[in-house]
Image (cartoon, rainbow, N blue to C red; front, side, top):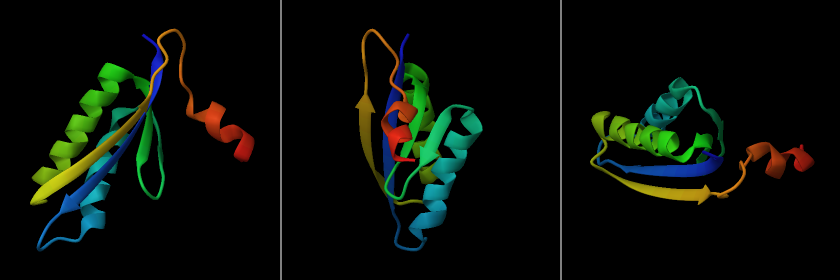
Length: 96
């Protein structure tokens, strides 16, 4: 199964809690998963098999809700190639 890139942005809504600590809960789940990832100002991008990344994304969503968010908006972006891997490095290396 080829590696894909999955960008996830979780936007928590809460009347009483600050959003940054809630987003940090999602990032903690992603970090603990062991997949390659990069946090950017607007989303976190992961690299790995699609099924695994979608399961991690679901756990990240659940963590934000469990931390007290009233609701969440979740935005995904994926790059998938049927016959070969997608790499974050191939897109960002020339700019570093």
